[in-house]
Length: 119
Image (cartoon, rainbow, N blue to C red):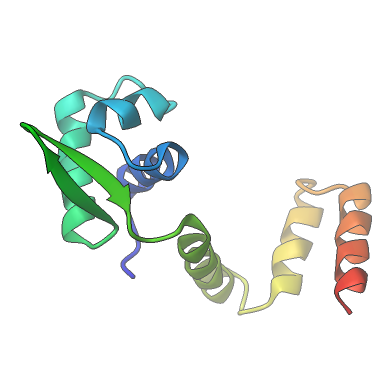
């Protein structure tokens, strides 16, 4: 699975959110609505070439559906982030967010409770 560019990720998020749909549907679902329709259409075509979406022809338009699940992409992407930036240590990842004050003690307690439940 190839890493996506920022614009491809933004398009995929809209596709996952929308489900099967047309480029206009994805454009409406995107937070950055300043992207031109033709640009988004090109990005979606690239996603199809990369194997992230498939298309079905309806009259003179194409309906696109995700092939790759969002959870699968997230898992692979996060594994790469942890490996590349945190020496393959999730502890280092959490420590980074704690030091940068991006995660509170209360949130850490919730995470610990979640981990303990899984045992």
